[in-house]
Image (tube, rainbow, N blue to C red; front, top):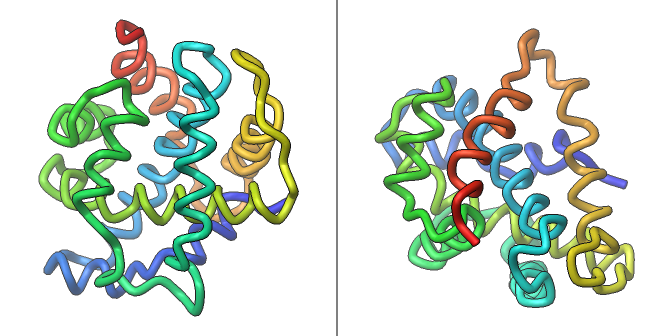
Length: 187
């Protein structure tokens, strides 16, 4: 099953940096932190039982079927307003400003850049997970269990500590601190 490296390969870093008028290296570093946080937030939602995971599975399936990843992602195809909604749902109702602030505090990059990246990345991440979900003929998760979608998200995150060449992977700190802070009090 595919992992984070495959997901990173779907993201047009150069095009995003150009669109945002930002340094490509800075954008790439932020993406390498934000994508695992998005996947981790999805996984938390599926496994925690705090939400109806069938709603999340429907959103993932719809994004997977959207065609966003067909023939390579065009940044102009990404619906950033939908991305804002996705970010809010993933992170327990917190808006992009709150999420960007929390991620910036944990070392993911500047809050302004993160705020611009999250609504672009969220639909790409959901489309990728949706494609994996469809390709693996995943079955819906039982309420509060992981099951299909939880297994896919876990598999994607399993590669977070390896590969990629980054010496010090901040994923553990971000998923532990940021997700706990953003999701902990929201039920």
